Length: 535
Image 1: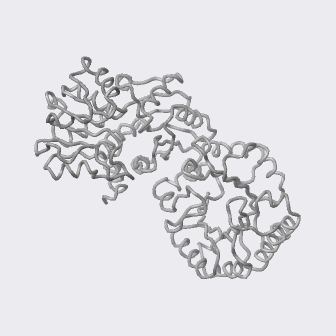
Image 2: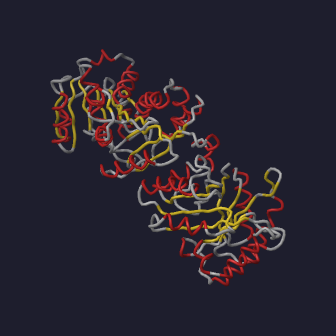
Image 3: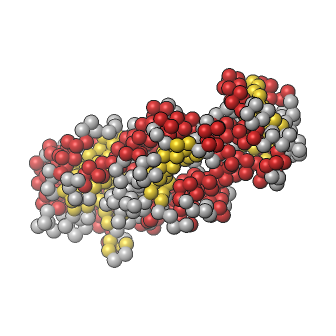
């Protein structure tokens, strides 16, 4: 079982003891005392304070760490000083259960080796276990095989830990793949984490890969490395206690992706039907080659067991291209739209590209209007934007007889989209954004990211729009729930359609594709509301 550890920076006794108590109350199973800047008497007193902190049948367990400045910590002393700190912390009845030493310090200093061998060996009084670690804040180490081999030579080690700063999502996936490389040569417990947004998946999936422990915050402290999730996120959102090697991994690919509430929606759905899956954010930079590298890494990662991905801005065209170029199939509607927002990954490696935006948008629009799709015939709609979501929405509107005008900052892109659908499915034309107010439309749909969190003050339309109670205004942006555009529409008495409704409707279809089970709509809808702070 992978234990959850809260890091605590020790500089004085009282704050450290208070932080330990708070971590225990928040659900931590261990704490890491980061003693980079602490003196020996302070360390001993903090360790002694555990006597009154029970966790189950024993004390709150502790990892003692003195991280050097070279590896991202604060300790700048010499090796003799480091050895002395370890010695003074490891003697007596309050010694920690685990002690972390950097591989370089172990290799470099005979004094450090001697102290920690005596403190953690079979004849030691403390019975502490030794963690041998390596941290690289510049990127993935150039030779991982050599690093692992050097660690495996440390006979005194009970646990190995490798951490690096992920420069892209491939670096994060590579960290997960290192578990298989380690276990092929050494059966001792192993933890591999990647720092930063690109490495978040290594922390969210550590339990699936059988790591001995994982670091998390209480939601108050900032953590000891970038990208650390909170205890609540791991246990309540990312199905921490349900993860096992067989768990299938799903995710949302986008740029940016940190704002996405899709993990909340799908993980709640998985839990409701007891499906062995977990859904995570996957930050992938905008270029097609980055998308290809990410999907290649995900599909090839040993032990990951990917089941599929949702695809959002700006990768929906990339997703279709990737599936076709890699021997997959694309459903007819997605091929018609020329955009894919869902890729199903079968265990045998085959891929299927879907577009659930089409039906999701139509369901959201007609549901809010309380009409069926046939009632859209003859209405006029202004669609703002010409990206992947716009393609799906234009296709759906035109197919049901809506007269569509596409407005975009780049007229050429809007004109190309209009030509793709005009004549084939209905009346579609394009116009520059400056002409938006020249005509009055029945329906206005924003398919641009303008107004999306964190840039919530943006609005894709001017304040003097000719809207009234007969106007329908639909914003596909769902975070925040009520965008500036929808606030303006509501103030003018227009009917508003929230982006979260489209998100939910398309997610229900994705869920069935991922799991082959009916989607638990009520559960997934409530998860979306909660994630958006609506209770």
